[in-house]
Amino acid sequence: MVDKEKVVPGASFVDDLGADSLDLVELIMAMEEEFDVEIPDEEAEKIATVQNAIDFVNNIK
Image (tube, rainbow, N blue to C red; front, side, top):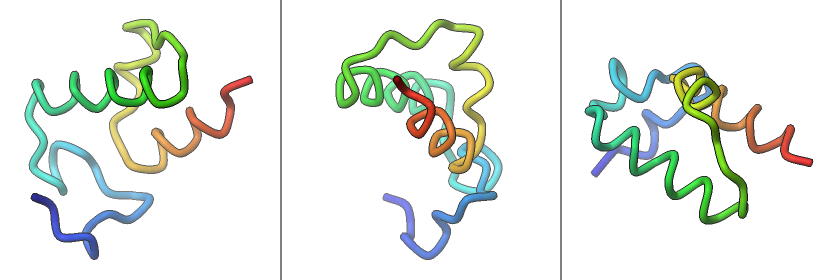
């Protein structure tokens, strides 16, 4: 569990929030399911921070 005060736009999922590679895969899968999109591996690799995830979601057409 992550302390919600740590979840800020600039927070790195790995460095600041303690996510491992499995957590990142689960995050991408959850985003795909929630927003009914497929995230290519090249794009998934760019989602390293909370802000990256926000930007990705905001750009879903």
